[in-house]
Length: 240
Image 1 (tube, helix red, strand yellow):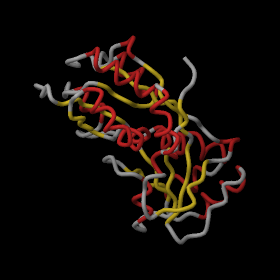
Image 2 (cartoon, rainbow, N blue to C red):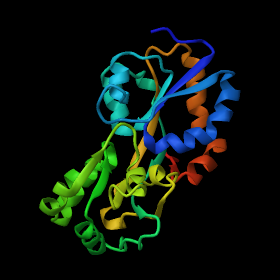
Image 3 (cartoon, rainbow, N blue to C red):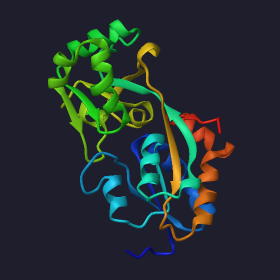
């Protein structure tokens, strides 16, 4: 596929989406191009990031969970030495606006909250995998909670499902819950069962201007981008 030279294309998973849109005007000034957000979904299906990369759709940089980006490097989608860690995010839960706050003050409180829920919405990304393959088992409630848990795909946020009343508990990265209207009491998981995920950026191997793509990633890692990350529920990455 050809790519219009007046466009700079970004594929970002949901965790970095809100920060990306806040920073978009600055990226457009930096590149001198219109920034196109190609997709905001990992998951599966034709519009997911893995499927788009497998088709070699036009893209300059990709922003996803660190472990997922490593897989893309191995698959030949991302230039290996272009990977840069940008931010981290914990997992949170939320309820529909007007509902009482869930008890997430301890692992025991979380366990009871999950058991009481009628429907738990989770995503196909890192938070959903952790909820359904690690957290339920650690709390000893997999048999009760897996059958009433609903996978939300297609790039839709779990918070949107809860906001319209189709589930009563949303689980996702905090940065993916904060922008959603109609939900409340967005609360991180208790520290003893929390999982922090790192999100990284890399340059696509078929990027048309790798130098410019690396400049954009450096901007995301720089001081001027940190405020947007914090405002959208991310913690800027300060390691190497």
